[in-house]
Amino acid sequence: MVNLSLQTGHFPVDWKNAVVHPNLKKENSEPNFANDRPLGNLAFTSKLTEKAANNQLHSFLDEEQLFPSGQSAYRTYHSTETLLLKFKNDLLLNMNKQHVTLVVLLDLSAAFDTVDHMILLQRLQHKFGISDTGLKWFSSYLAGRSQRIIINGVQSDMFKLEHGVPQGSCLGPLLFVLYTSKLFDIVRSHLPNAFSYADDSQLYISFKPGHMANETTAMPLIAMQS
Image 1 (cartoon, rainbow, N blue to C red):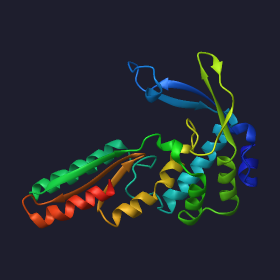
Image 2: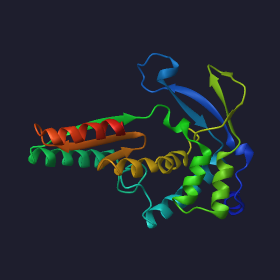
Image 3: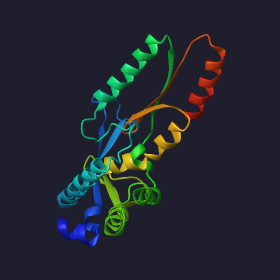
Image 4: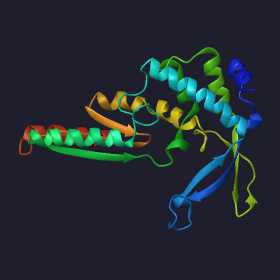
């Protein structure tokens, strides 16, 4: 079934229906929607097929060196630790030059739910070179998804998902990284330092304090990017 799905570029409709159990992000949080983390339960065959596609896509991106250079999520030999080490090292180097560093930390709200499918497919095709059956498979994978929510044993009606990548899926996080890869192209044309782990980004620029020209240049740049 997995091979047939990948060879024909078709992801069966029955594999796209998710059951969501809202869980609190932290144990001691108040039980409200803002503190819920929606985790979707998907069919086993769905996740198995996703895993196969994820492994092939990941290998392709690694071999062709197509991963966004400033993104540390879901990459071999990259992690939150390597990102923090890079950030700390840059701060120390700037301090050695007697520079101060202006930092903006960004965190997208409901980031995985905001993915536009058409933009993602265009990015896969034009930026990462995925075409023909591969692109057809991703289009089929994203289209026609639905989910229902269960709270205290009570089920909601099934409703369609027009945007976003599936919560709790194997492939969703990697697709989100590719979807947001354009961010680095835009930011780096104005700001030299921009790094992310999934939807958490750090933008920073250094300058010599007390030098009016440097401060005047740095402030608008960092404000524009944030």
